[in-house]
Length: 191
Image (cartoon, rainbow, N blue to C red; front, side):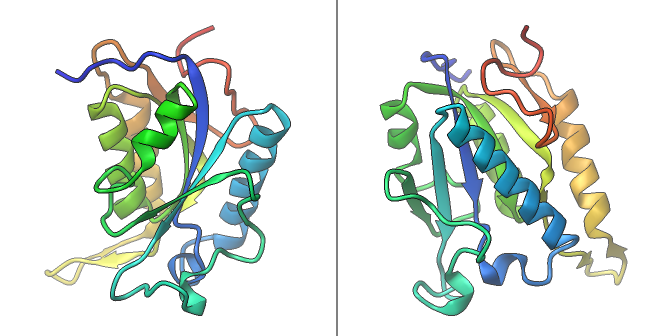
């Protein structure tokens, strides 16, 4: 069983909203605008924003595809965590950044839903954090299975939103909220 995190503070974790990640993603302009809305709400309320940036052979650091989308950029006082794996927790400084801020509630937005957002969401819950997935601020591309079936990106987003709304973990709270209804003062299910 995971240790339930102490701290009580929230942090907005923005994952991989990079040119090469969202270029062909489903409904990218709307999703990026909602990520920007969540970032602005966090900043206005004094909630720390932690940026996660993926880099690997397909998304090489310092290339145009690796850069943040033009609508978003970390401020000089905001942490940037670099990762190589789907989960933002694996071999990164994310847990240290969260601990520095006494954050036990992660508010999650970004891309790609079926890879890095899903892996980070489950990793957060497995590590004892409360989690709010910003339901209209994550996206991905449609995928094709080995058998040739197409899974529409919008359905991938819907499925993760449903999963995060219904999962139960002992001692933790998780759920979804739109960028417009987002609250940082309490995890889902708390007043």
